[in-house]
Image (cartoon, rainbow, N blue to C red):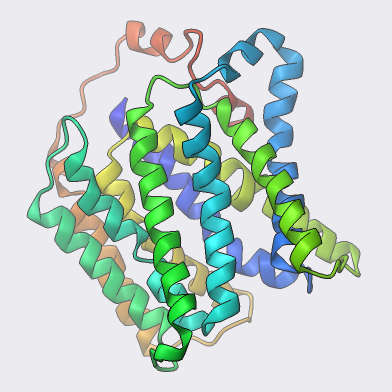
Length: 313
């Protein structure tokens, strides 16, 4: 059960790997406008589930702390990340923002029933080094004049890691609520767009396909499976493995001709892959017992995230 949930959570990392490619292909739409549309699209599968099974609407009735955590996590992270990119160079801001996997691994020691081992931390640090090689391939130059941007980037990392860790504590809350988080994030992003940006629409059908792809996967399905993964899987392994996202993203850009291969990418592969394997060594050694019929049925009791099955189908 835990292994399967971890693998499901890892599919979010795979989808985030396509974020850069699809964003580059989506045209010149400003970030908050893009966020508005993508999160609206990302909520559609959940809305379809509610239409097909109205009884699941009752699962949206959750304590205020659940809603505050979810909305602050999704909208807060994107607001701070976009703010960072507006007030600091993208390379440095991106590197600071990508502290969130390391923060998840370290913060997991505060969760009930979790123990932070040396190899979890070493794996996350190795992944951060690999990310540094990729993101900083043209050099890193932190300048105090961009302190506001760097601060926003760090807060975005803290926000997403905090959201992921707190979500683990709400493991009894159905993943259906992520639909509400996406809708709220879309609405709040719309307000930011109207107040801060000029509207720019995609110019071609290909750009619209990229926008829809963003909404369905990296800014849609990814949040549902991530929610399920951090609640039911191994959050330390997911944290360390998250550094594969920038690596895979770069490899995808190379494959599609948006970037050139280099020795840095090859070395980053060793760091990130080695770090992920190191962090997951306990799972590799663990014997996985055959899953009982009772546990299979347990996955489908009321309140469990059936919406995950909708995305897989």
